[in-house]
Amino acid sequence: MSFAQSIIAMFVQPILSLILLVFFAYVIISWLFTLNIVSPNNPTARTIYSILASVVEPIVAPFRKIIPPLGNFDMGFFFAAMLLYWVSRYLIPGVVMPALA
Image (cartoon, rainbow, N blue to C red; front, side, top):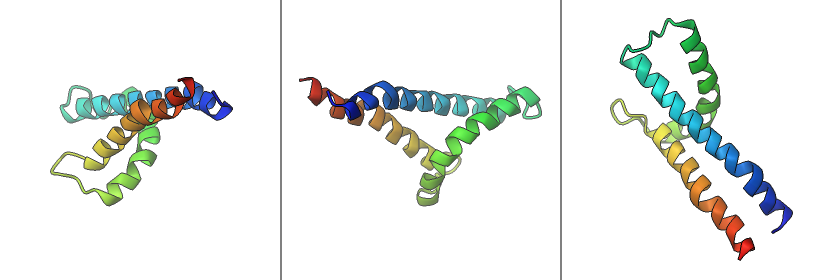
């Protein structure tokens, strides 16, 4: 295994998995706000949401410019999450695994 493949396997894969977890938490908190389960005026919840948004929004913004929302469903967010998942689960193992064979 080359050095670049080791870096991808040890650092990039876990970072992508963490970003996907942040995407999931962002969606859950936005749903909690939308359904009035958690008040948007709650300072702790608003702080957590803004921290998650600072990670999610730069990734999703280019997709939102290209793909319009479908009703209330943010298609840009959906495609960004699907692309991250695809890279994390299929592309990176495809790059790393041939070196192990």
